[in-house]
Length: 149
Image (tube, rainbow, N blue to C red):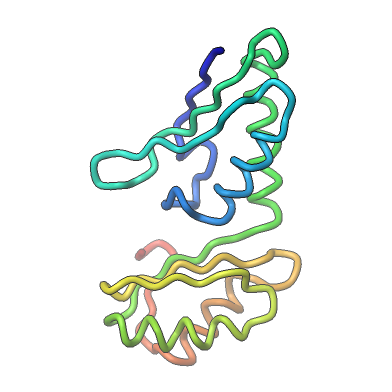
């Protein structure tokens, strides 16, 4: 058995959580491929994802082929699904914004944190980042732009 470890940020540049649905889908899809025994995310001391590791049988799936598969699946995920990360005043504002965002057609999931952070996953075929941000702004008027989060 061999292991291919890739920097998480190279695989998912706009995802910052190991349990993000895009990551879960990618891992499940990888593990269904012939020659791949296990795929998982290694997290750092603060819990941030650091590496995607893929354990494979090199007699069945060579490292270059595994890397190509990861790249293709990751690109497909990024093409179909987008993420909005926003910080609002507090947990109450985040919950209010999440409630509104969940009603946007194409939003697949919303998570909030006590510090007022929202993480939204949406289907790019059904909505846009602008529509998600507009829904948040209906509830929260001081939303920072994408570069501010």
